[in-house]
Image (cartoon, rainbow, N blue to C red):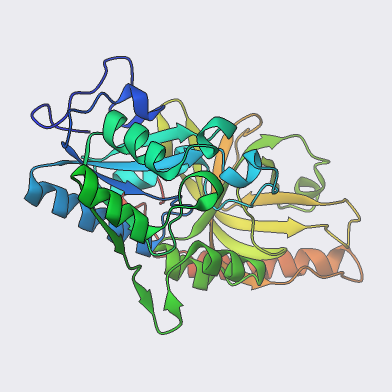
Length: 337
């Protein structure tokens, strides 16, 4: 949200998320604008946002994030990239870092992609967002054919009267925190490494649909998820935390074990199935968010159902031990993360 002293928001839009830059109606030179994709809202993103909010406060400006949806690759016919977080989830996570933040989700269109760099700055950053300062990543490009870079942005800033600079992402001994590193970790099933970069367990969202009830017949009933576009980790068995999502928001539902794969012993086909510990209630039709805490094992084919049931029992016992000290994150308002 932006204070009334520094920026006036159109009453037609939420203070949390603005559907396009032209709806913000920000007075000239009243905002500090951070531009980025922010997929995953990992620890590097979180540090940039927190620093931008502090800088905006010191300059008497309103902090604004500018991001784009859909991803430019989709509009330009270069394919659909896998995403770590939906746009709604990104907004939620960014505002958890900085409650005073306004997030502008600008529709990325062919028309927008054809803007020359100066037009991009004039129309979006100055006319719509009222930028007095602009913060971008080291590899930021903008304008038609990606002609604009940080050097041009700084040059335009000097000409047009706004400050511009590139930020550096925080990192660890393995390098800068990045969405690509998270995707790599998930691709190998290392959800622990992914969680270290994100600052929380990676998660996916899905709706509970009817399955073949084989889990219930084995003594371990499962919720079969029809998942969203969020990237799932490599197939296998994981200890997890599960939130229920409804119109009131997300709240912790329970702890469990999730299997991603083809269930080779049962020959039941590809699926994402969650067994909730100590839980017995109808979940059909509900939206769940599954947080991957630790990989337990690969999927494997067993000689028979008795061996499969024995292994599931071991998985459940290990998950129970691993998750015993976990509690909902106070910052998540009753959800796990």
